[in-house]
Length: 631
Image (cartoon, rainbow, N blue to C red; front, side, top):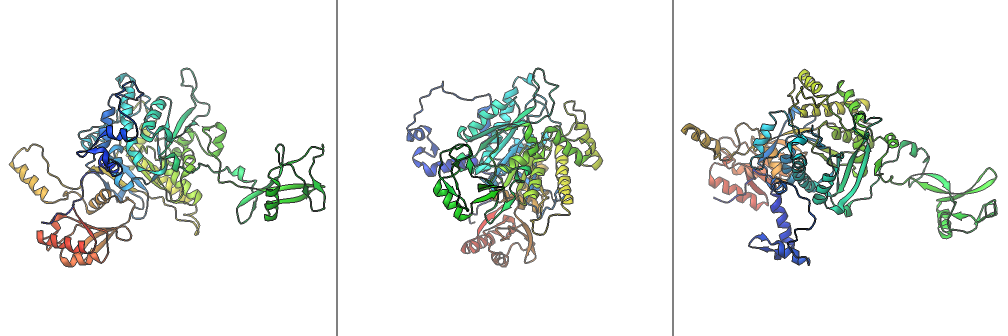
């Protein structure tokens, strides 16, 4: 039988992909298929002197973090159209699952595609949840965790900082792969782990790619619970994927500032400002329309002008400078044009609250307005996230939040899209952690639990988060007079829901058998490459993940000679056919598929009557330049 490549049941092999990149550039540094570190160092004039005294950031479990990040996931993301909003048309994604496994599954489809990451991870204050990863069997561990209430990480455990570092490090390594070269990551944190977070980010992203350590004034007049000093701020640290690719950062001007720019021409908005300077060295006479000359002020001091005499004459001829009479005196003025924006300040001062950066109380107020009760502990305000989004995101950019929590990032993206008529896309990832109504460390757990009971929803954080996004989207359209004006782009308030699960593709189970009957069941199951309890749509989206196709691509059901198939992408990038009837996929079916001109066709081995039919199909497709893959 002809050898046809199969769709892998595992996520992208990140370590091997990175090694292949090194091999392509430095083949001389590989020996017997393995990287020789000493040769690589010598190539750059550096030598491994085994100096154990050089600076390192180490903790117990760091080497395990490398293995955890590099281990391929055997899971998949199963679509849930019934829990989604506008599933067939939206570009937004909401994923329920352990963010470590999800980040692995997103590697192929979103490698180097994300413009901005914002995360608000556990601050490790002793009361919040820190996930313990399982290197050997992460999917089984995930199933266990989602069936129990989350555990806190008290300082008395003895590995307080270690546990937190072991959780954060592999996730940041995987997240870095998803950022575009001009992408950035923002991380909210407080003083508990700020120093450790900066150290691991320096290692993951590179010290040279550190951009800023913002101070966010998150409380007004709070701090009564403090022991010594009232703490009214948190931090937002910012790193670039590659600081040399990062465009200059600007934030929008406030509405009050823009009021002065009342004039407008074909270039843009401006106002007339004085050409005279209080200091400078640009001294020269300017002749007014009536022949009088401006050269000295009323005290007899020479007047310094904004620009050189040559530049003044050029600007005057272009209309960029004018000489006008105000009352009885001549005034030289120039067009002060509206710049692109202003550079963000590293301290979000209390006065900048008026620039919509908000406080924790504002975040609670927003969710209270949506739910009529408090269901989230200390949610971030949308104003803060919108402020960060304004730094370097625009139309069609992808924003990722893999500690999605209350869903603030999704809400902020939709709000900003409405304000500037853009189509940013969000990807939210959140662990469906059970909500314990008796949790004494949470002021809102009981309210969230009761809310879910009222709606008859599953008891987990994701259900509250998804409902927040639904209500926020509805509010945006209602406030907009039912969507935007005709000349504006339709506002995308939808999101596709996916849930982390084991692969849809069957594989041999090598665990011990209880009896002979169990053996026959196992043999029957392996006859089909797809698990019996999975849908066509489950399989189609797993194929997309494994082939590196983004999850927002259109999936269009079609018929090929009465057989159901799925076209992925508007131009039929990939064709998936799982329906083969009693006669299997015939040569006529293959010819009909070729008419759609897909780049790849995916099916199962069982779809063909015998090996000959499969081989014939392979050669027909090969002749037409179409790749065939089997499940």
